[in-house]
Image (cartoon, rainbow, N blue to C red):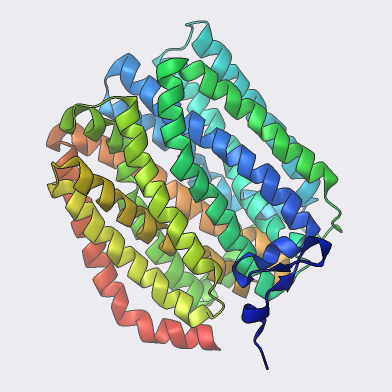
Length: 420
């Protein structure tokens, strides 16, 4: 018998889709895929433009770390409780309101920058607002994926990989475009484009035809405790969340330190920064294409550990390199390893999570994924002020390498647990 992966999946108009894109056979997921793709591109334009704006106005590496910290730390503080709140509400309707809030945040940032009113204090405030909105939006959007593929487990794993692929296509093409737009028009135009991009996802969400899932009952605190008990009692969830925390705390240094590397090490400008960020996006995109074809949870577990080890090696190469071409290659490898770890963890966690706990398990993932990014970025920015960017990259690589080596001792038990 010919396996499904070889024959493909029926898509729109009866056409056969490659197995790597099988989730697109679902109309709801296709609508989401298009809207989210446009939104992600806008978000990358804003992220690169904001980091350049901060460094251009202040020249402070520490402030780069602070703004990155504030844009993500609410994920760690608010995220877990947000998951309990999400499981008590209609996910699609709630997500529409949050996306409109993000559009207004981008519009306000564009207006403040265009009028010249923007300064360090307002950048800090806008970064915190963005973080608070993302603390709700990220787990909410991720927990909706299962309903977009009609609860089909094999298609859910593919949908998660394709969702990550969208993010990394944006990471690949967004930064170089942002670098060009900043030079031609300035940061405000990038912020404005980001505000408009959220409307594409809003329109897609309004067009979805999904049934409301069962809502959790009880207080937010009680619902949260139920999810936390499940996460602590599950061995694979515990191990994956620990690996996720260490990986994102260390690898997050690149987002804060790349503007410094572009300007001080390679004597470049916003275009140089765009190429470095784009290289990471290229590696990330390739990793999601690899993960989109995986169906076995044990093999995904092995890939997660390998991805973290690859990331550690790449950090050390970036630390030692003064050759731009080598740094670009190392950033591509770092992007590959980082996304294999993050997307692999997300895939496993969502696949093994019971439906009634999905919002909470996803929120634990997103709070650690982005919250530890925030803490790591802040620490990296402060460390680079004293030690320099290259030394900070080296320290982060060593810490991650030691942690992954220790976790490799748990590999066999993790793989066996995922086979059950």
